[in-house]
Structure formats: C-alpha cells, structure tokens
Image 1 (cartoon, rainbow, N blue to C red):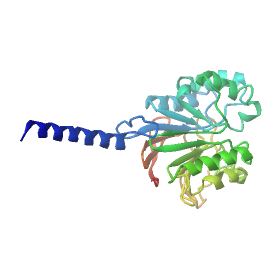
Image 2 (cartoon, one colour):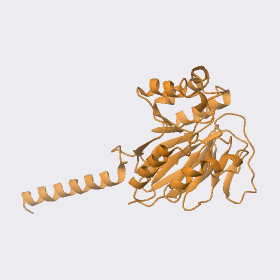
Image 3 (spheres, one colour):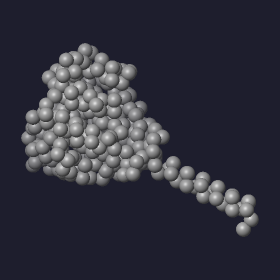
Image 4 (tube, rainbow, N blue to C red):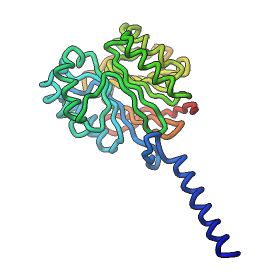
Length: 284
C-alpha cells in the first residue's frame, strides 16, 4: 500500500476516534465525563453544625463530586452567624462546588446571611434563580419561597424552552410531591411544578427530613432529599405515589450523569446504598 494512502487512512482513524470521544465523553460545558459519568450529589437540611450533618457531608466529600446541589435550609434562621457556625463547619470544604437554592429557614434573613455568604464563597452573587449545564444535562434552580413570582416563572419557562428534550434537572427546596409531614405545603409550589412537569426528567427538593422517591408523574420524577442531618420526619408509606422511602437514616442522593442518562443512588451517611434507579431522558 502506498505510504501516502497509509498516512491518509491513519489520519482518518485518528479523526474518527476524536469525534467519537467528543460525542460520548463530555457535557454541554465541554468537560469530559469520567468513567461512570460526572458525579453530582444533592442534599438538603444539613446546615445545622451537628455530628450527623458532618457525617453526611464527609460521605459526599469522599466521592469527590463535580458539583453538590444544596437543597436549602441553614438553621435556625440563616443569619450570617448561622452560616459561619453551622453551615460552614459542615460544608465549608465543599462550598465552592455547591449550587444552592434557598430554604424556608434561609429566606427570612437572606440579605444578611444567604446572599453575602455565597457572594464571598463564589466571588460573585448567586441569584435566587439560575441555570447551568453539565454532562449533557441542564440544571434549573428555582426559589420555592417565591413560587408565584412572575419574573421567576418567566425565567423558568425560557429555560425549559431551551431544552428541546427532557434532559433537565430542576431543584428547589419545598417538594411538590411529598408523603412526609410537610405534604400540606406542597400545593404552594404548584406554579413551579406546572412549568417543569413533563419537561424535566427530575425534580429534586429537601424540606421534609427524609428520603423519598416517587413514581413518574406526567413524565417527571420527584425526589426528596432532606435527610442531611436534622431530626427526621415520618413518611406516610401508604401514599400510592411513592416508589421508595426511608425516614430512619441520614443520607444524600448521588447521581452519575452522562448525556441521556442519570444513575441515582440514595446513600446513607455510613456508605450503605439504600436505593438505586436509572433515569433516561429524551435528547433533542
């Protein structure tokens, strides 16, 4: 075979390999996905400085996640002192990798606690609603303390419209689908749920201090991840919307994300895997 033809064929093989790698290894932010997917964790209701909360945080940190979604609540009222004494002692080492959303314990004092804390950690302000992309998924953070805010709903609709399929993970503090003690509060966040229902593959929330996974509703799955180290709340296991729950242990949600697929595990503070699911989304 002529030398020139060999060189051309070799170049074509290299180019094909590079294209295949680009198509399979990275998220929409251009970062390559490690083997098994990009690791993202979600947890809420752990900003209280307790030993239990620190155990959950240590479990998350041990996995070296790319991002951590903090699903809200720094106790007792999210003041600057609460962030310094309670939140930073638990999640300070992970804070730069965190994507937060405000909880009901944070919001009353957010101008003195939540806002300046995240501005200091991130070197910029963290909006109360925002979006970002990672590993082929779009993430949408919304504020469940202002669920009917028109500007927020308009922002959410624009972001949902940007995602042509269902590879969207929305997160906010108060869950719309809930079998815990706060289930009577769920209808208040219906404006947010209506925007993402059927368009987001996943909705993640905290607020109820337990772990819950629900069956798909209109194509969207609600996960409650509020067992970050505060006292736990009972779950009504008779709720027929529930697929799985645990109100006995502290823990968090681990996600391995790749384009079109999310592999999710509820993990206890001691490392036990409590529940596993795989969720696929429609791309394009």
